[in-house]
Amino acid sequence: MNQHPTPRERPERPAKPADHPGPAPGHGPAERPDPAGHHARALPPEDPTEATYHPDPTGGAPHHPPADPHTDERIARAALTRVVEPGDEHAGRWLRTYGAAHFLHLLREDLATGTGTDPFPGTVATRVQNWRRRAHDTHPERDLDTIHRLGGRFLVPGDTEWPRQLDDLGDTRPIGLWARGPADLRTWALRSVALVGARACTPYGAHTAADLATGLARHGWVVVSGAAYGIDGAAHRGALAAGGATIAVLACGADTPYPRGHTRLIQRIAEQGLVLGELPPDSHPTPSRFILRNRVIAALTRGTVVIEAQHRSGSLVTARAATRLGRHTMGVPGPVTSALSAGVHELLRGDATLVTDADEIIELVGAIGELAPARRGPVLPRDLLAPATAHILEALPAHGPTPTTVIARRAGTTPDETLAKLYELHSLGHVERKGDGWQLTNTVPQRSNARRGGP
Image 1: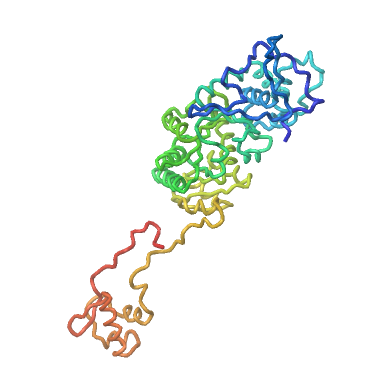
Image 2: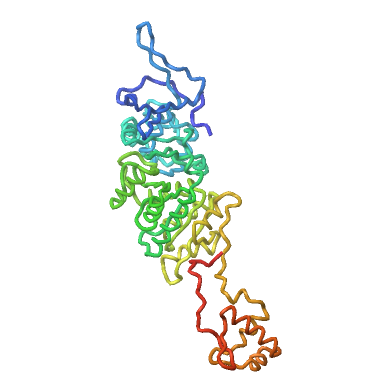
């Protein structure tokens, strides 16, 4: 997908305005800072034919470096994250048509001095006016410097760290992602699962989310969620407790912890995992931004698991987005009497798959051969008896000693055959002799303590 205007579309590039200075030293957008403090590594220019600027060693008149298309696109996209709301399909279409730098130029251009033609036909005028108003009040270099000082970076399509599965969103693809954390997003996203659910969850839901996250983390999977109260927070904590990887996708700036009660949790995720946001630093969340954020969670991961959700729940929006994108959709069942299970059960009645532990999730989203263990109940001692011996055991009354002849008559066998089987049962501890009769032993076979049955 071409992100730059064609030579015919690209206007003559004027000198850089004074109110848009270059990036701060050491934080140029062509470099990605290393959170560990190592020297940043340079990103190759998108156009390999672009000339490289070298200062004039003769000390003559100063030379200006030629414009770097990759740098222009990064700065323009950083500015557009303040201009355009996340998931705006109209803006995405013009971004695809013009490229970020030219799109921003058209928004800042005064129509009185332009060609007089509408560069955005088919888009409502009020929407364009809102874009123009915001475009004249953006300072992308300042935002880039802010995220760099926090040890983060701004990712755009074309970067080696950009997860290509986000391109499945089409024109609603994020303009860019503001990221904090030491991990490589593209690598982590290749092996990630989203765990989402109700904010006002039950103890059952919180325990299940933490248990699933811990199991996934121990198998080397990345847990992705939205850092909200309830299921999201339990999922992040479960992954962190197992020393695993987790990603928080926020509906605000990556530097703005929300909800405030999860400030410490989000900080831990930024230190041990990744914190992502479509919005630039110091941006606040809104209800619509929460809903639009969910499409990123769905597209970023290989599957979405819903744990407790009512009929009207943002978690169901994430699950439906995952289904549209061809991702796996899963649900954890709950009590039929709970309203928090109603939304999950609705999913399960459709195309979602029922899962109850990490092994079943991995079986669905993992590689071929990563199968969950077989499930069956515990094997009891009487299950190992031969059919003829078990038949004699079933013929013994529940109470009181019974003569051999009576047992033989009840079992429909001869007394001699019955007596041989009774001695076999006696040696195995199932029956005992009392006088001239036989009775069941009082020993209760020990039951399996396996949560879901033995292998």
